[in-house]
Image (cartoon, rainbow, N blue to C red; front, side):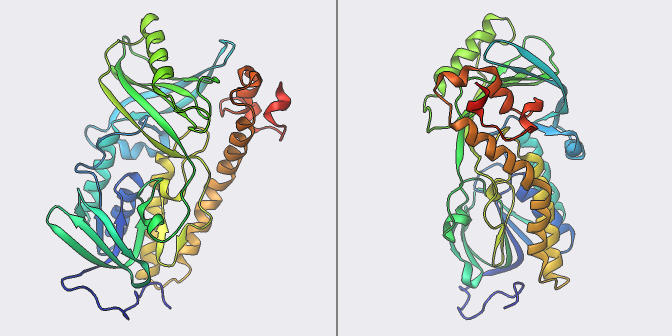
Amino acid sequence: MMLSRPAQTKPKPEHAQCCDVLVVGLGPAGGAAAATAAGLGLAVAAVEKKKTVGVPVQCAEFIPLPLSRHAQPRGVLRQKISGMKSALPSGATVATPFSGLMVDRAAFDQALARAAGEAGAAIHVDSSLTELDARHSMATIRTPRGVLHVQYRLLVAADGPHSTVARRIGLLRLTTVNTRQYTVPLTSPYAATDIWLSDDYPGGYAWLFPKGHHANLGLGMDPRFSADMKSPLDQLHRQLVDEGRVGSEILFRTGGAIPVGGLRDRLFAGNIVFAGDAAGLTHPITGAGIAAAVVSGERAGRAAHALLQQGDENALADYEEDIRDQYQKSIMRAVARRRELAQVWNTPVARRDAVHRRGWIAFPDYFSGEAACRDAA
């Protein structure tokens, strides 16, 4: 059966709307997919469960320089980043070059969604996928104006690590870690990101990402090793207040889940394609995912065009091959490092610098050999 032709054996609900591409989720992946597909002339509908795209922000808000074109819209760019300082358990701090941009993530996501709308996509916010009949390419969407039935030719699942689309078609949940973040005042201008590597943050790390007069102070942790994230984050906040680096006021609190188990076994199923966090594209060590989300969204949009407009039945397989070629090697290395670290969390070995040098991208040790972390002791 042609992927571009949804099965018609089941009657469409009365008043069902038809589209070429249904995008579920309007984060970076969904926004990029909707903008690209609509820009190529496809009829696109995009749904976002949040009332306002990008709000609340659940992100450290850093993007690499190759995404700088997406920081051009008004209100997106907050400041430039030029370095990284990685603090080890011994107290040693290693500075490395690290170029990128801090953005207002809400404005970033909204700019992509706005571009999609301007290209002709129908945008539905405060709207959730409630039913999915993948066999007949029919989705039921709850919107503020009532229930909407959508007959699609291709669905782009860009709905995050706990993807509703994946659950509806019976796919396994992705492995995730939890994050907690405060936005705090920054006492003086700062152009580096600070990283703390410690057994205090098992399964993750802590960070300070400056953005103008404020900074994002947060941490990620694996709930298998510790469920209390508030205490270590509050302790780090007090430490930085005592050092005079940040203010005591907490301006904003947020948190969320980050996929850390690697790519899904398949990035498409029938005429459903996964992008961004829903595909498992976030880096399992750093948690970076915006760039991969945008790239995968854009490629999913182009794959939709190739499939639906040009009749290329290999378009989704080519999409998967392209994404794996670009990201799988680095993601698999990161998954391997996570497995090594998992052997030593909450043991004395996890307080050794060598273990964390092996497990963090700023150090050459991360890219060397295959010796296990416990051997570094």
